[in-house]
Image (cartoon, rainbow, N blue to C red):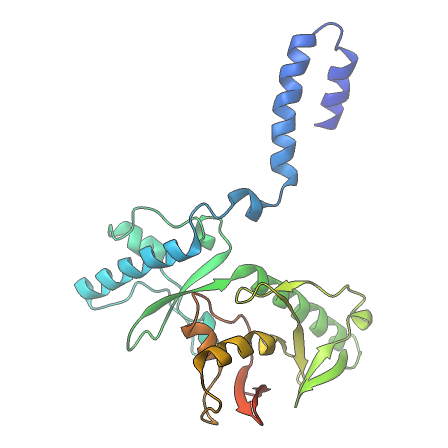
Length: 251
């Protein structure tokens, strides 16, 4: 593209009108190439609106068929990754006229999931950007350990969970943006080398909003994030209420 641009500049005295037209077209093209895809889309369909429309579609589908339009998953699939919406089935049967632009299947940044599938099915969103960031960190941690390195751990944040020493990984710390608060949050690694997203800071406003000062010791506090938003926590450990604060716990 840039070689063509130089050639056109050499001929500008011969084809001034053509040069102007081509440069205008190239400017638009380059802008599209350089601008981040997710910003270009500018949330053409707001996630909240998309959640409502897909919720209505699965409710009607279940009412008519007694089943849910979800993809198969294994027993090992984590809770908040388990049941992805089968958009092809909803489209084929006429329950949706178009796949939401927020959906991964249409170039968006979210997986649409069904949770509480056996009681009151609800649509929630899994942020693919965070999902990919954690997978990338996990890959680097695994490679580091397999190459003979010890766990790349920093400060202990919860019993058995540690900050990641990115200097050992020869990698800058990524900026992981929380869908719940918009703030930057961190990844953790446990003693088995498994990488998680830490939503401890995000949990506090949801806890305060609940108006409770104590919780059942067995309650998984991730449910507060899910019940209070359109999103699920991505690759997060379970959290329990311990000594007046949320604490990540081993499965």
